[in-house]
Structure formats: structure tokens, C-alpha cells
Length: 470
View 1 (tube, helix red, strand yellow):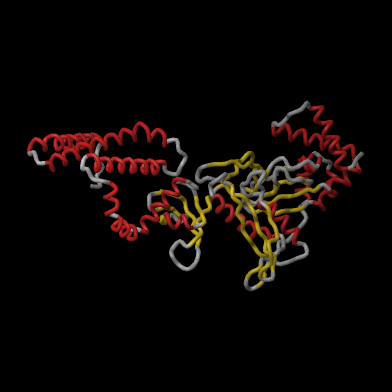
View 2 (cartoon, rainbow, N blue to C red; view 1 turned 180 degrees about the vertical axis):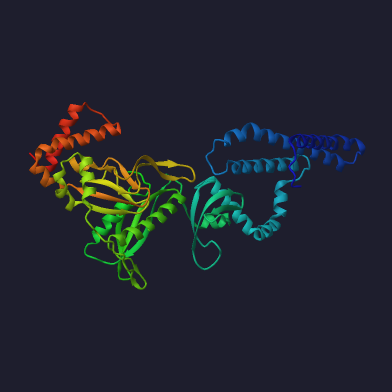
């Protein structure tokens, strides 16, 4: 029975069945004049005609109309209508051919119907719950659902997350993130709280918490973690954020909030956010709190960059060598974990960064369907050792014009605005070199949008205003 039957064999079987039905309808009355045989032949003939008529109606009317219905399974509504047509056909045959009164038939079967109804209460509950789910569809096949309720008949409530694989008259089949298939009765689904993680827009906020020791400079840790979470793929109008949620175990509970496109993207973002928090906060000197108190810190030694490194940075910026000693005390070293955000498009900024070790990427978020529905970073450019970025915000105070994320473990050097102020006020004639720097960078990125002289005049005016050169 598991062997697949070919289409020609099925066609031949239907033809043979039709011939047998016609033979029974027309041959039996000729064999014997008994009234019961004639009624049986009439029942067979009218049943065959009703079946054929219903199939024609389904093919010419129901299927074209219901194929445009945006429900989870359009065939479910079709089956309900087809069953109704069969009931009408059965009632007509009983009344016109067998001369059976439907009112008497229903009256004599009321007690039996009550008994059957009570015995099939569970089945009927699932059936009507399934009808309700299909007529007012809140989810469809392929959606990820979060279902909370009394799912297994125990005393408490539980939550189940899974992707809808199939919806039948009696059950909804969910495939969990572990690959298991959970089959829930429709009645249970109808009584539970169902959150569709894909509807209406697919964007849903997710949160993750971590506890740190309370300190007066907690805002510093919040800022560092917020910058790091810029490495989560996100849309510009839904940036990740970090807030102080509450207190617990003698520490401050930080809640990381971010928006995910679909369930699996949310899970990946949660894992990455937790990893970044556990990496960034201890690196910034904030100890995490646990049941046994704060965790120990691993102290990283800080040292000024070497003179050769400073000379290389000054040479790349086109500045005179005697600026090395002016800039060196202000230079900051930053260690980055893979996936950590460095700067985010649209954020304010006043510093320049140089890559000392590792690889960074300039990225933009885009929606993809594979390997799962979610937001992913689209690489625009790679930044390796010796390359630098952020000069527009450093020199003019303009918002960041790109998002940069660490692709690997990396080390970068940050040169803030205050490092330039004293030297530039002492030698304002070097302003032209900084304008040359911006002009060269714009030509490299092929983003020239205005005549050269107009650009240089505008940049010179912006740099003078930003550094207060008059």
C-alpha cells in the first residue's frame, strides 16, 4: 500500500468504478422487479450523479475562488463547503428517492445523537476549535509561534516555541528549535495565549539581562555596552539599547533591548548580546554579580603606543612629525571582541580610529530569508591594520556616516578631538592639510557629490567652527 500508484493506473481505476456503478444502476432493475432493488438502483444512480456534480462544482467554482484566500490552509474552508454539499445531497436522496422524512429521522435520533456527542466531546472540541482557527487565521504554516498556557494538562502554565509545520482538522503540528515535532490539539491552542513571532511585521523586541556590581560610574559601563551592541544586525530606526532594569543579588540588573526579525534571528541576537556583555563589561572594569558575589577581574595593562606607531599615524594623516608628542598622550587603545560594534551610523562622534590589529567591516543591515528569516550585516568594506576611519566626525563634528563592526578579535587606536585642539590652535595654517585628508578620503570612497572647490570651502568652514579657530 506504500507503493506510489501512477496516474494512468488511477485513471483506469476511476473508469472501472464508474462503469460498475452504471452497471449496478441500470442492470439490477432488469434482473428482478423487486421494489427494493429498484430503490437501491435509484440510490446508486443519484449518488453517482451527486458525487459528479459536487466534483464539478469544486473544480469550476470552489477551487478558483478559495485559491486567492490568504489563510493558513485554503483547503480547509473548501473541505467544509464540500462536506456541506454532500450533506445536502444525502438529505435530498433520502427525501426524494427513499421517501424518508428528515424531521422524523432527526427526532428519533436525538437521544442517540446526544450520546454520540458526549462520547465525542473531545473530538468535537478540537474540530470546532480547528474551524475557528482556520476561519479567523492568526498564523499560517511557516510562522514561528510562542504558545503559553496549560499545554500538557498539568497544574501550571508553560511556554512552547515552534514553527508551524501543518494544520489539520484536529491538531496543529509544531517543529521546535531542537527539531522535535510537537502535536497540539486545536482545543489547547484555542485556550492558550499565542504570540505570532512573524506577524504583523516580523520585528519583535527581545531582551536579555545581566547583573553587574553597583558603581558611581555605572553610566560608563552602559555607554560601552550600548556601543558594543551596535554589532547586532539591526535597522537604523530600531537600535539596540541598554537600561538599568532593577536590582538583584546586591547588583544592578542591566537589560539589553534589541529588535529581531523572526524567532531564530532573535535567538542568535540574544546569544551574541549575552556574549558581548560578558566580554565588554569586565574589560571595562565592571564585575559581574552571581550567587556567590562579584566575579574577579582580569586586569589588562595599559601602555602608551610606541613612537614608531605614532609616527605612522601622523604620516598617514599628513601632519608634521613634531605633532607626535602632542597627540601621543591622548591616544586610546581599545580591544574588541568579534561581533562588537565600534561606531553606529547616525550617532554623534568626535574622534578618529586606526586599526592596529585584526579586521573590521563597514556594514549595512539587510533582510534575508536564508539560512533563516532575519537581519544580517551586508559588508561594504573591510578595514585592516594601518587603515583608519571616522575622520569626518573628528574634524567637523558631523554624525557618523557608517556602521563599523569588528569581524575578528581586534585592537584599535582612538584619537579624540581634544588631541588636535592645542596643536591646531598653535598652527592654524595646518588646517589645509586636514582638508586635504578629507578630500582624499572622499575620492577613495567615490562619494564626490559637489565641485572640489565648493567642498573644500565648506569643510574648511566646518573645521574652523568645530575647533573654534574663528
